Image (cartoon, rainbow over all chains, first blue to last red; front, side, top):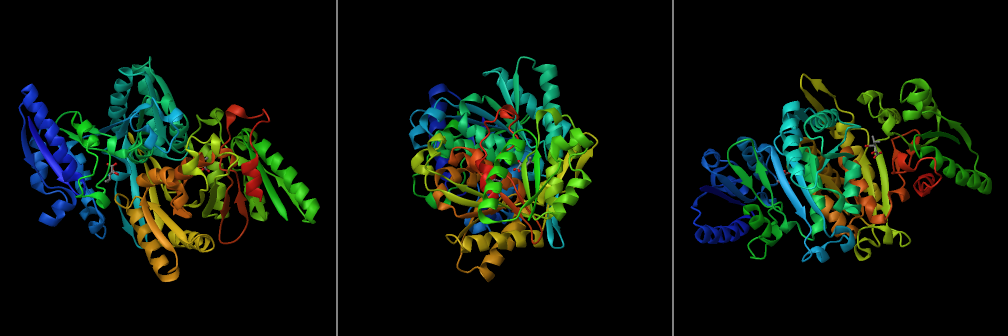
Length: 296
Length: 296
Ligand SMILES: CC(C)[C@H](C(=O)O)[C@@H](O)C(=O)O
Ligand SMILES: CC(C)[C@H](C(=O)O)[C@@H](O)C(=O)O
């Protein structure tokens, strides 16, 4: 099994290294055959090659059975234009692998919940699987400047919505049977399409699921006041980015949260939800649990 | 002083009525001369006239010295197309009045903080003024469908950013001297413009302010883990919508939070941050403090 390691920036290399110790141990213990390759991405790739996603890394990712990513980004690359920044490397990788569904399980564990700013009696027992659309929306739409103005386009096709909603509905069916769609259908046309497609799919193919629909502003409140009510939450790319960071606070530490980004076929991309945390990089104190859980 | 009352939907009429009792009392007690006019907006306007923002309401708003709004929206109008929904009336009103700055103060009061899911020791003492841009971004950009797809455009000009950032910086200067910009500059071109313009304005005209910049995903965490650190937060329309609802949870109830929407000239629009709350409408139990504070 070919695994591509992309340590990236900040605490990325530390957590990938810690993850590999676990993986090596498991491989030996279970006779699971692994070969590693290591590639450049993000700021590390910019420093070495001038671009955040070298062609070589993309080729290696396409060859791999799985890609393990640490984190990308840091203040030293903040001055660069949008398409030359470390994050552009991550976005290019997600697009190239076609990993449209980003699974982020937020499970509150008794060992860490005291660290959370949320009261224990609200947070404990929460177990939410976020399914964030990962290859569409504002992240990948047309964008640019026009005279004194700038613009970003959010675009979704029916097919892009359908595939990720089905994946989320399948996940909900094998869990507690509840699916929540988060959108902003009172303002956004793309949200109205998300809502129409989701209602259609659930009505036709997942009659046993309990579907709830929340506006994104309201969802930020419900996540904090009744987190145990949620089972699977599906949402578009930017809302998923925002809500998963918010919900991570329930657990007591974003350092604990793993993610898997999956497409229809090909390698999956596995990375902790935390970022590159430049403030603690290189000190050996980054929590590698998010990476280890991603490997699991 | 001409005040236009727009009760709207759900609990809107109840809270506007409660607000008027206070206003009447103050007017008498202080010899402040008030005349009221009442107009239709949102679902109530749709039911009576077929449109969420009758021309008559717009004219009355332009004539008024201040507009007091209750809330708009409700499940009975969810099936309507985007531009015919109750919310379209509110958006048309914001645009017509040119109220580009939506001020939402989030002040945690000892009397209510126990109601919050956030631990008292984290939330207490928080006093954040959100300045949300209100007449631009995804709310007012071009949007529509194209075959099987839908799109929304987020657009900001330098001028739109400048005026609201200056207003926020002025507010911060008269408070604790800290301004936080929230954006998603690692992904969005509009955010990169927000960041450039804000840094420029602060460096040139507000040298004494302490400027912090946060990505929107990170901001959702910082609001919950260190809310007391924030003084004034300025951000674009949709991020402001999302973050103010999230931050309202700190106070123990969104029913307590007022807002003022201001333009360069003309009438301001004053409304509680809570929505129409159809589930408790007509029962006389809606909390009118958000409305009363908006009047204050
Ligand atoms: C680094 C950034 C581009 C990325 C995103 O916004 O998707 C990160 O915040 C994440 O959630 O994986
Ligand atoms: C009703 C809706 C259009 C509105 C918004 O999104 O601006 C509301 O959520 C608000 O925050 O005032």
